Image 1 (cartoon, rainbow, N blue to C red):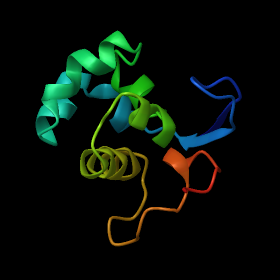
Image 2: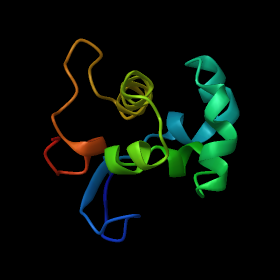
Image 3: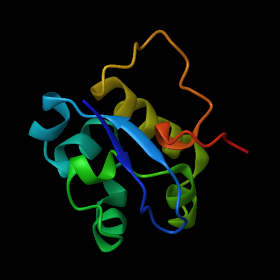
Image 4: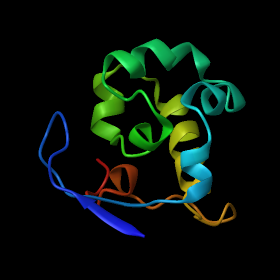
Length: 104
């Protein structure tokens, strides 16, 4: 299912993302542990991303604003893509978290 979110923080932008039943079944903590990013659990929760479903909509700009290092942002984006059905052998699109906004 394709959904559009027109009210993202901190900037208004279009966000397109796929939703998958696999992505909604996992807890945020479990996913972060699985990809070795559990140290950011508190950071994401304080920013309002307290479920995997919510975190899977985070943008590149939001990750940068939370001071998440680039390599860790890519690891998280790859996991979002994988759980959304993006082929693992394909490079990630050059867009902010599948938002439709070109990366800079």
